Amino acid sequence: EMATLTIGKLAEKTFTSTSTVSRAIHKCGFESIIELRGKISQNNISPQYNQTNEILEKSFIECTQTIESLNVEDVVKVASYIKRTNKIFVLARGITSFVAEEFATYLELQNYNVVLINDSEVIKHLERLLKPLNVVIVFTAFNSTPEFEIAVSMAKQNNAKVVICSCREHSSLEKYADVQLTGYSIPILKGNKFNLSSRLPLQIISRTIIEYLA
Image 1 (cartoon, one colour):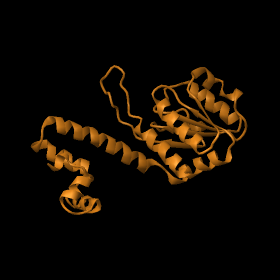
Image 2 (cartoon, one colour):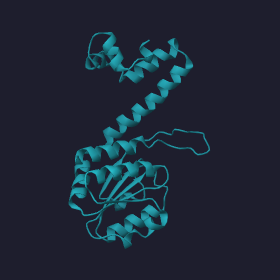
Image 3 (cartoon, one colour):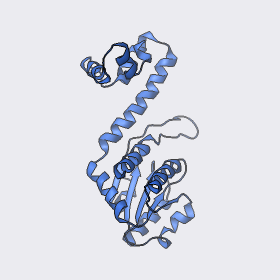
Image 4 (cartoon, helix red, strand yellow):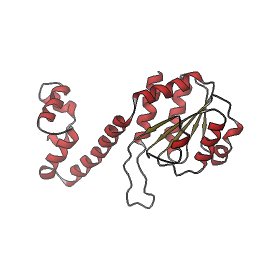
């Protein structure tokens, strides 16, 4: 039954706390409850439960590795750029636009002047909108959009601050970034003709910035 329970339910059934259960799991040699579930499910539960545990473990890995990769000083620096500017441009394309839209909405709710741009033509000609000390924040999973490099290079020429939020280190955008925040992404539909990867790391980066500002 343990393979199907959350850590909260385990604490409830054992009349303890979640921290006690977490310590017990670590003392048994497991990094997390996800790893424990996987070990139990190998022999004791159906393949459907085993597959679900593998999926949950992917999310756990993405979260932990993204959090470990984030530099606190960089998050504080991004927040300071946002606080000091009079306009923020948030750029994204494709599925990543949903993450960027949520980020921009939360900034607006905190009374920041933010513009979300997901049109490739406008991105290519971003310099027409930029002024010195504006902030350009790019959300991109793997930097597969060539327009981003055009936009951020012009942003630097206009003395704007550039923040890159991505899931790929050492991309072509890195040389233009004042700050780069990099997450760890795992494919969701691997083998599918679309071959899509998770945007969860970008959501973690977005949430960290938003909550720090709040």
